[in-house]
Image (cartoon, rainbow, N blue to C red):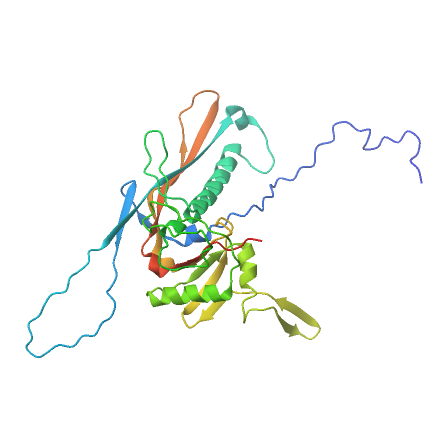
Length: 316
């Protein structure tokens, strides 16, 4: 078949309106399970402090009737602290934008501000998981918070050769060692170690690679279950891990280092907020508008013995 002569088709036409959907599709991950799960507490200084303590080990305790009582030597509490870190992002939009008719959003400023707020939340999650020592800051250097790996000293497993624990005060980062594979034996040993020190971990935060390793733990291999006649599904799931030391939930995360696996007692971690997230319009300096999204906070490790860490895990 062919067109009749002189057919004026769509290829000849001028002025056909564009066909652009009024939607913007974005599937970028924005989950921040650790940051979202941490209790938010109030910070009133750029250096937020807290205290930890521990009972002495049990000992034989028997005394003679009427014996004079001698006081035991006591140990002071440990005072710890972390610096608040300023997370800041801004967007500048020409005022011409207010007169434009755009697809997918009514206001470019509103759209971009929401976008950078989500991005900043990811930055916060990354900082909380980062092996980064605290920095006091100065007039020429930014304050930085100490991330989770800097607080573990008691319950670390799978540390590779050449690795070293941080001192647990946030003042130094841990030294990475040679990477070795995550094993169920090391994982179970971590849970036992935490339990022996009094911890009750709830959640395991780990990368997609380490999650796949955990799926191979004994008792959690692939299972095939029949839903109904002629319809079957493969179940490859590890929602909870039940051990004599407690039941914990596995939470895949994207912002922690792949080599680190964290076994956390959630209520023993918090985020101290000096300034909650705010969207602020800055002063005009020309034919444009500027908005800033800013948050200031720090990480609180209430007691590192309540959680555990598997370090230097292979990522390939």
